[in-house]
Amino acid sequence: MRASTFLRPGSLEGVFEAMAGGALVMAGGTDVYPTVVGRDVPADVVDITGVAELAGLGQVDEGGRRWWRIGATATWAEVARATMGPGYRALQEAARQVGAVQVQQVATVAGNLCTASPAGDGIPVLMALDGEVELRSAQASRRRPVAQFVTGYRATALAPGELVTAVWLPEPDGDRRSAFVKFASRSSLVISLAMVAAAVVRDPAGAVTSVSVAVGACSPVAVRLNALERDVVAGWDGRVTAVHLGGLSPIDDIRCSAAYRMRVLPELIRRALHGCGVAPGVAPGWAPGWAPG
Image (cartoon, rainbow, N blue to C red; front, side):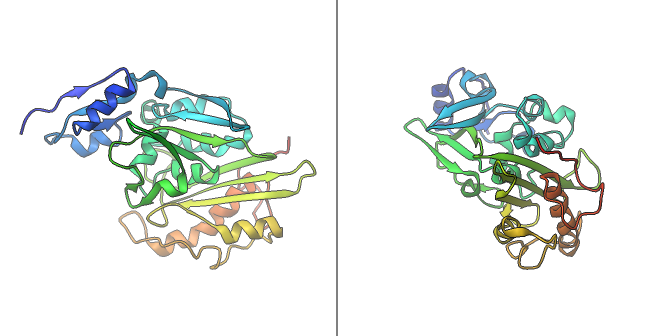
């Protein structure tokens, strides 16, 4: 086997050229490195962190709407430090719980999506916030909702020659609050047993106009709980039923059983919704604090 070459081009054209030659794309490397350490790397590696237009995050006006654009090489630490407002609190809460502090300095939001792990902390959050994925090739670009980008266990909608160049999050039409609740044996350096991201939008009068609830680590891909979302908008009594959880298919694994995941999910959901200001049926003090404003 020939020795692989490490490439770090300064332009997207250079990245696409390397990809055309079969190079493995890498940003933070926190998912790539464990898969190749101690083994022969079967291809060249192209590091995309040298491409300036893939870096950073900021607000952008497009199509008559305000968006947050998170570049493909923006790290979780950058997200955690950004001033994004309460509507994006779920994303920033997740950012502080991905791996450990050292991992957060180099691991990227886009990389978390591309790995497409069922337990990827960022995926349910980006789904709950109606995120979109920007995909580019040497010839064209397109956008897909996060819910359509992750297609299965470690599988995505990336076509040959395509690269994730950014993640887009739309500003809501109203006052949004969001929250992320991760259930694991400890707060860092551990894979989630289950997780819930929620977002609730209210009109100026305080009425709930839209709800998003997404669950991770309980099915091959993160799942939106559409039936529950409708019930919360209509007026929720705090109960989480089998109908609400019908789209989930957890498995037994080394970390816990499927039955245990399903047992804890109702409480995780209530805590996440409480963190968004929807509080019926939740024991006082169990959910993240929330205040209108």
